[in-house]
Length: 158
View 1 (cartoon, rainbow, N blue to C red):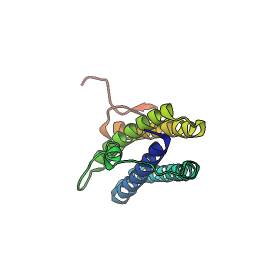
View 2 (view 1 turned 180 degrees about the horizontal axis):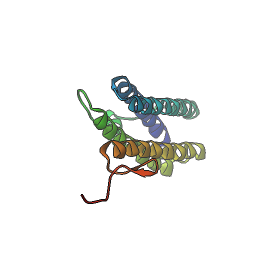
View 3 (view 1 turned 90 degrees about the vertical axis):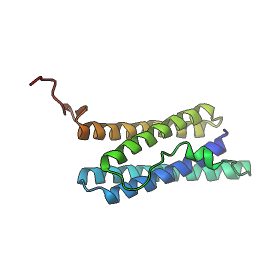
């Protein structure tokens, strides 16, 4: 996959993530979940802007259109249907962020342009931090991890 294709796919992925997080924020009954989804939506909107600018610059530079397929994009977006619980939405968000950060890492490795490589490297780290945020939220809700420096579960035996 060339840089132009990677940028075009990234743009579509960010748009899908933005849409997903806005939908989840609208449906969230928990105020903390709503704020988290809105924060993630805002982040994805910023990423969309970055990829859009860089894609336009590459299109002008190369004078060609990327040849991406629906299948290339769909591999990066988890499937879901119907109503989602907030926990299921967090699980899907985690899966999405993991796929995205791995895709961006690979795109950075394959990028020839140092500016494109830098963008993918930086946004891979941000997407990984989104995964960590969602994972922490999931662990907190499921009481399977440590949240904000205190345990959500007990190691004591009753």
